[in-house]
Length: 112
Image (cartoon, rainbow, N blue to C red; front, side, top):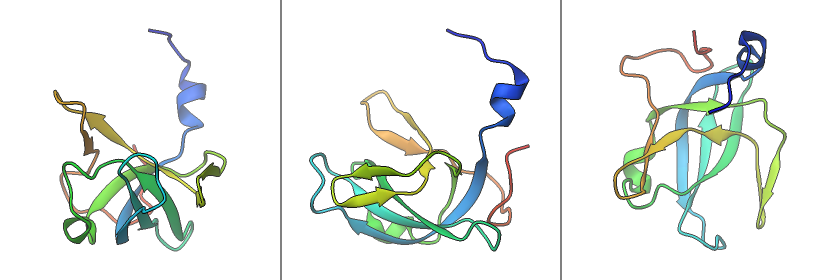
């Protein structure tokens, strides 16, 4: 594992956002959702593609707090321009479980 400096880590903007919309990403090569995530007044709503269809339904995602990287450059994923990276962890089956705060925090809050 490569080590990084504190300065490297501090450049990554990890923020809390609330999923306000989740839809099946029909055009995706692998099963995925298109998420609209509200990161608060300063950042606003950002789109992301997330391959989390095995553990979550669109209905249960709406309203959920998630942790996302908001300062990566936009990335074209098929017809979607992804504007953030929603974070998660692979479970023992290789499915992605979302990284979420365990207590309510405001949208846009930065990882401390």
